[in-house]
Length: 196
Length: 109
Image: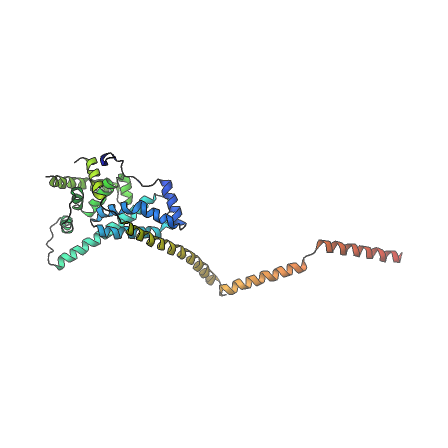
């Protein structure tokens, strides 16, 4: 099956399967841990890499999120799917790490007396971080701001509906729509530049 | 670039990113430790909650209290056994007392 005809990425498990997995985890089933890692780890890593723009930081974040999920698994009541619950933690953690890294980079810049940042600082930041990017689409996404990367990743990579993005990212539906619209426009420009 | 093409390209670009088998094993082990720790914590917290409840309501140490309750139940068992009436014994005693009364009554007549 070619990539173009592949079905859209959806939840890796059905709601029943995800609840069964949660139940096993809540009962301390060690095998369920292996299943959790096999089901979610790589996918979460890719999402986190796209949002954070840093593979190594994404690795740490995914590890932290999985530990966080296991630690609080008894508090999971099954109101949402396990996927939504884990991704909510992931997106929040990515946001936190992204902002922290942004602040750290600004500190480094000011220490090096290179703090002549123009108004559109996120773009400068991305240029600063990503010098060795080869992939066109990912390169274009990496040039967006953290908030825009977040919605673009959840919409285009995770292929989530807007309502679900709003829940996971804890922002209103209107904000999701406006962010997505702006991110798309920016992405279009970047991609047209990329493609010449 | 079409939306569909964009998604496909993005997905193919992202396939390069994955955890190594060793890293996945490490994460699994770490998670298993967290899971066990979490279970122990739950058990401990229940034990701690019972103890704190006991000490919040009484000044008697919990172990002494439990021992006193055990002794109390044992004593209650012994007392109940002592005063318990055996039906067969009761019937024989009753029959004997009736027979005695009849003999005594016969003598007077």
